[in-house]
View 1 (cartoon, rainbow, N blue to C red):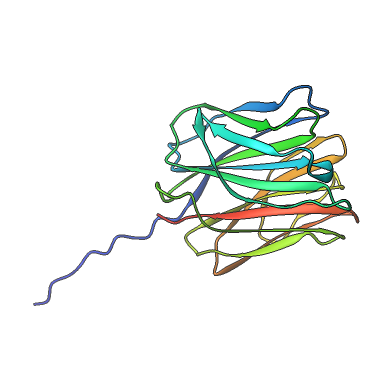
View 2 (view 1 turned 135 degrees about the vertical axis):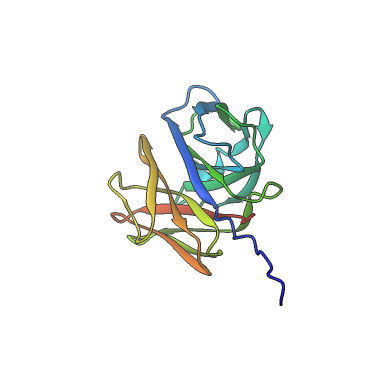
Length: 214
């Protein structure tokens, strides 16, 4: 008789927990909060949205539990649209509750941020792909390559406090720092994933990244 072969089932990247914070008219240069995973995370992604008038304010760095996170992508800005969005990632983060710290290069920013931990992802490289976009209209969105076993996260900022996520997306966080309204969502991976939002007309930026499969 023939021999049977056991094939291990693919492990999908799964959402674990979310946390978020915001600060308006920042008197200092940092925004910090506590993220508490439900399980033992294999990766953490942090989305940061901020108002950067003429590029004056930038992100100096993001840490998770004292570990420096890697900037995956960040949108630009111009004189018409000063909203910016960025994604940072860390693979194989420390377990348990950890402090997230976003540091700006100078005080005065309007910052919104959210952290998303996942399980079942690659423990060496948090993301497989990412993309970004910005504009000034009612249909913010970006398309990126992913995989059916992965999970996509985004960070979106616009002028509408009542913005709604696109089909298939689960809103994970939303907060507002003055005129800067920040949101984050996740969506299951596919060969091509569209991360979009509906908003009133105005300047917007969006950054998105796909948590890499195990």
